[in-house]
Length: 245
Image (tube, rainbow, N blue to C red; front, side, top):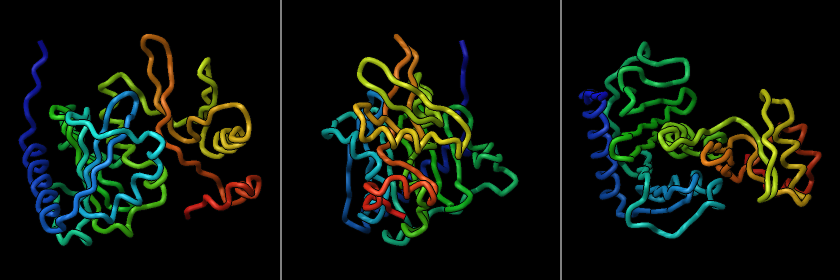
């Protein structure tokens, strides 16, 4: 039998950050709750204040679902500026980061922690309690890629435990079957997938999708966004009104 010991450092910081979220909720007296069906699981996003919801939720709107008393995953989101909260100083140093932004001593298979280099946003998951935190200093720092594929790091961690893999790929198809398009950035995945919007094929995603293997290989849509280089958008004049950055 495999026995996992609790990482006390990660547990303490997760608890401290969670308390900060609750303080932010009380200070704003405004809570926004949204529920989404992701990979067949109900995910609840709970925002302290209203600043982040318009940035985080649009790419997930096609997966919106009714409130659930016992969601499979709960994610608390807030920023310091609009809530007047002060996030505890992280107890790690720059030497603790991996190349992908994970914090080594605070990621142990039970807790997962990452800090995004460009925005400073913190993602943290407690896989035992199916609860997660997402924090940023102010809403204006949320980068465009986060609005296009929000909470990807947290969802990647959590869904792996459910037998689902977030993959960097585009996908189109029909209920009977589909095509998964893989390739390095700039190889044409997004352009090809978006070109199918005017066809009989269903658009499942252009940048990230969810893949399951049981009982048979199948695909779940993750985001409704599309990403194009500026020189490619001219091929899709009917999408110009949807450009957000």
